[in-house]
Length: 300
Image (cartoon, rainbow, N blue to C red; front, side, top):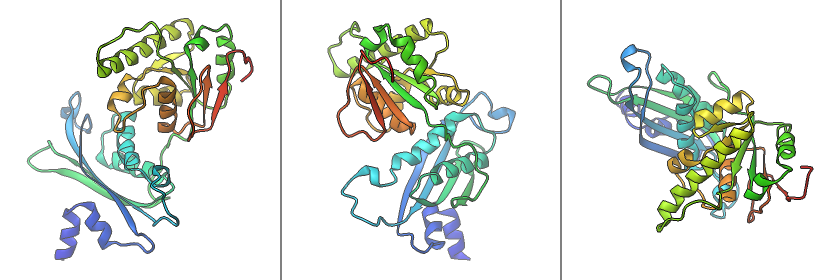
């Protein structure tokens, strides 16, 4: 009984050890990840945020070859926090149980994941911690939509935006077989700042201004800045222009500075089916299938 109580009330990693699976050698863990979020079924929990703590353990099989210190060959820790962020941004939920199921589903959609332990606790409800803990394996639980509609991401250089071929390119991109997200170049006429940090902010805001200008002349486009806005546009099949400030400033890694490389970073974050780059090039390697289009090329 003592061992059962210990594993029940300690970090989920203790429970994972107590419930060891054959052929599971490695565990990734996230501890005490606290987020301010609006969640809850009661009226008193609406229009306010509360602290919610996440503890997650993901079990993976040992690699069958040398990793060569290559992050692309492992299940990245960022995919765990990304699962949390994505589900929190998708919609307001009433139940921690629903949130835990969706986070588990998203993590188990990663090919390396064999089992996941998810504990979520409300820290500001009453005198203690109120929470739920679940254990799931692939195929278990009520799966929901896991964003299998991979977007087509297109980067438009400044010259591409000024080209007479732009309407034709946009029309072709709209029939590419997936939700369309446009990423824009930083305008050459932006202000200049004395510090790199200030210049970064100016560049991001300049891209967003260009996004709104493009949406003003292309009435079928919407501007999307948050994960919720992007997810909603993709779910509804609406082509959108990405306003990057919010996602870049909230990123857990360090997104690149060059706007075309930032478009590749976005495509990787969203698991794009392909990236189309019009009027510029990218350094190798590309982790997303990438198509380069010259300014004189009318057919994509």
